[in-house]
Length: 123
Image 1 (cartoon, rainbow, N blue to C red):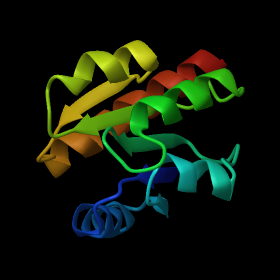
Image 2: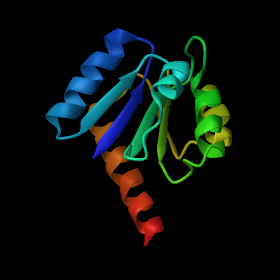
Image 3: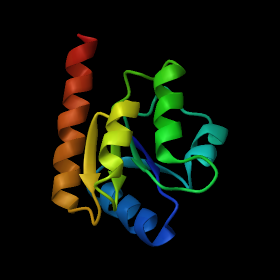
């Protein structure tokens, strides 16, 4: 399974990416929404995990872009250190929300659940 991890804080992004790789996922990293869009979102991405507050293009704007640009079938897991951002991200189209600091087992469970829902929707 291919994951796009969008997080501006390298101290969070790199260890999270490494843990995901050790759990068997292929991970592409982006520093913010602008970086993710500039790299080109691949149709081979199975799940997007994005932070909310980032420079240039924040998570809410990235979610709106993805949902409006034909990527609505890709599940988006939003994350933030502020519970106040949950409504913003869910209203923008996120499929799930996790509060930072992220419990890695919760993240894995969320990925499994969202990827399963996406596969069911394709059938």
